[in-house]
Length: 66
Image (cartoon, rainbow, N blue to C red; front, top):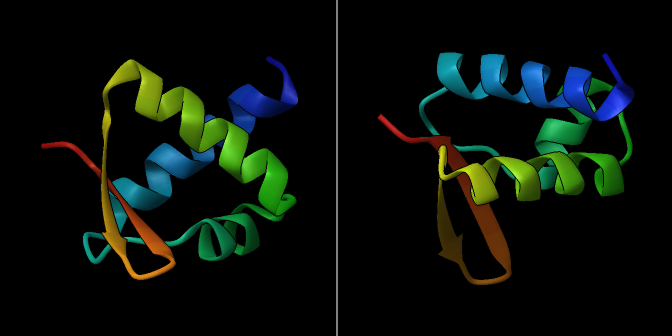
């Protein structure tokens, strides 16, 4: 399993436990990766159709779809 796959699994776990929505910055801190790596993982998850994204100003909150 590559690094991005580990980050994707970590993000899925974090978002399934936290229903308030998290930013890229918060997810990168929780997964201990760079914001770029977290953003790439989120783009893959969004492409798979498993994320809901809510835009508030400059901020994007990420949620797992139910």
